[in-house]
Amino acid sequence: MNIKLKTKIGAALLALTIATTPAFADNHHAPMTAAEKQASFERDRADILAMAGDYKVQFDMAETTSWRDDYKPIKAKISGGHESVRVIKDTGTEIVLQHLLVAEHGGKTFVIKHWRQDWIYQPSSILVYDSAGKWVNQDVPQAQRPSHWSQTVWQVDDSPRYGGIGKWKTVNGVRSWTSNGTARPLARRDAVRNPVYDHYQAINRHQPTPGGWIHWQDNTKMKSVDGKAIPYVQESVLNTYRKFDGYEVSKADDYWTKTQGYWQKVRDQWDAVISENSGVTIKEEAHTGTVISARLLEMGTEVSEGKITEAAAVEEARTLIQGATGKRSTPTASTGAASSSADY
Image 1 (cartoon, rainbow, N blue to C red):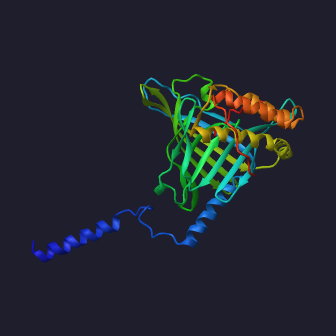
Image 2 (cartoon, one colour; image 1 turned 45 degrees about the horizontal axis):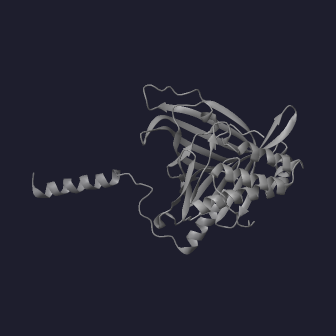
Image 3 (spheres, helix red, strand yellow; image 1 turned 180 degrees about the vertical axis):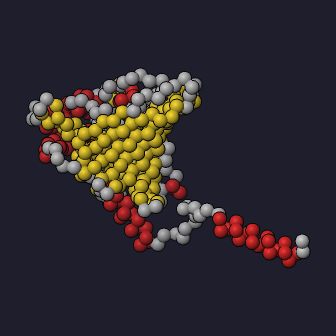
């Protein structure tokens, strides 16, 4: 074969290779202009704020893949209910969404204060789950902050559950926020069974839909053994929020109007303990989360029904939180029943 022919064949093969090499979405992009950054920020905010509203919710939970020969996945579970989500704080770079379950039992409608999600733009630190009953503040590297949002999820009594950081993106025309891998304690639905695993490693994803939004959780259920985490089973959780107001929405708003002052001061107390100790250690139990959760929720109901004053409830809440954490702290001035088996 002469040199010219070899050269032509080589060039043809090179062209074919280039033509068939897949293009990846994360190839290098030119830096965004200031206007593009602002537009991106505003779109992120819109997606977060769009989670507020009134919904029919379905919680789908399924252990899908066992990582051990000696473990059999449990039966999938589906539950649901009605949930109102309210924006209780919006400073521009911090958005707080409070979830309120509205349920019926024995012909009576009642409200359960549910989970809370706090979103912070370009955070310097995140409160993360460390080990049984312990959460710590973790610094976010400077390089990881630009255009990223942290999400911190709080339990029904405003004690912490888990935190993560990620970036809102548009892929194939679909908007989503996906967290980094995060540790989190067992949900009540697992904790009450006394399973072999003792915590999750999870990835969290939020996506707006035409009729509401979805919350995906990809959970690896782990067991801590001699300082190592052993995977037992993979679980997929899909919480679907569909806009719906065919329930007593006014009950949720009435409850929140009457109790928001109480819950603000409860949050202040948790925040003070966390700030002063760069985290928090809390006594927990399977059925309620923290050992004080049931009483904190009960006082919320009593405040809403006028059975106890807000001041008395706040004072007792402060004592309970100090006792459960072993810390005494003074909150800074703020600006601005039964637990659920749902997963969040």
